[in-house]
Image 1: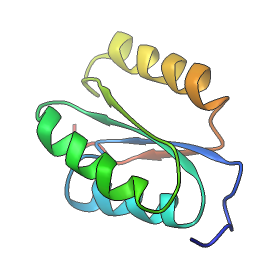
Image 2 (image 1 turned 45 degrees about the vertical axis):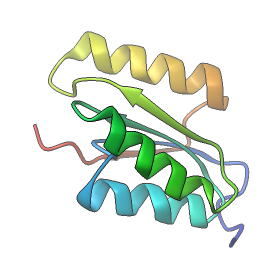
Image 3 (image 1 turned 90 degrees about the vertical axis):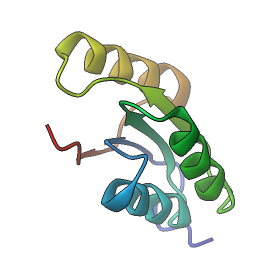
Length: 95
């Protein structure tokens, strides 16, 4: 694990698959703790989280619809509560 982003927290919208999952993994590999949102597949989100955790970072999958402001607000609040803040925000969800 590289520690370039050690002690940083990130939130990635649409992070369970494709480019989003790659971003989650890269941030974790760089040492960041990462929360990410997913809209549909809990199984896919869990698989992404498990893969990212192999880098030693804390990973938090959050079920949230990026088209719903209330849902995203709750995701932000949960990220702040559980990871201590948000240093990096990646708006990746295709909405």
